[in-house]
Length: 490
Image (cartoon, rainbow, N blue to C red; front, side, top):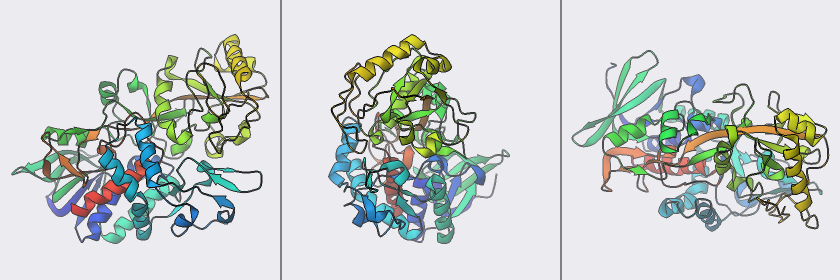
């Protein structure tokens, strides 16, 4: 065991929320150490694997220009305002009213200020043209879905910027330390015990400990226990290290559970790529998120959900679960030659992805291993049911419906022009929604609702904001908002 080292604040975790907490504490002159389970080449938690998309409230492009990177497209770009009221309404809608309202109000009201704070420290942001905007026929761009801002360099750039800020503020980062237990003396948390890759034990002491080490999505056993049968088969999109160690350690000393432990963020994920778990090179690009434009079928050649129920930002985090429920936990996104050029380049055009291409629906079905007559019947019924009098417009909820079962509420375009494309997708799990119960300042609460002295929580380890679904980009925003709050008093 190493000699105990005295710090003011220990932050357990190495992602966006952890660094936000560390920065906020360091700015106050606190001596901070950050314990990251991954070595430097595996550091960054789930944040490294994201696209860096961050949902904030704002008043439109003029409100964003002073902290996003300049781009010559700004002059021909429309960014609709996204108010705090809209943000809160979206949180309530997608969680079906299960979001913790007080937490949600903090998030929507402080999201932009938190981004500006980090930008002032050195993090770089931009408008996400390739993911959140459509180009119009007149050469202009229209942003959609309330999610407009992201980090330069995506998740990799986010973590690199955070690490630079931490070094400048004097935060010590220790890599390769798996924190496993909390040290409690006199009813107060005073430190952390852990182990490194060589099996050596470590003990670090401080006045405060901030748990920012994520949820439990990387543990097949915990997924099966809390999310249900079948979830042990989900693919882990992000870090392999979020197995619930510190959540378990906090519960062991009396912390209360918070949020919805039975649901998670999960997406449609490349089912055929050779390395489709915790891929550090492709990261978020193994998602398949242009599905609202086409149709999705299962092994029986049948559609089973409304691909156009809403903008992708409000459905993608729950549709992974629907894929998991299908036979073999696999499905296919299908597009024709008309739709193919509209798919996200960064997700559908890179080398090594799984795709079937054929000149007819029958040939496509054979390549997929699906009954050709069943797929043809599904496609024919879909095509025949589309209200073609309504213009197709992917920048708005266009109401161009396919009146079949299940319906497709928007963006229905016939699958009729060859060649045809089928992308196999399975369920990729991002993070779990259940965690520890905390107050609005990030103090961990016990079963009676009282704070546990010296213990704080933020990021995906903090439960309460999300249930069943979440608005895209609100996870990174929540990490910085509540990480900043925890670090401000730890």
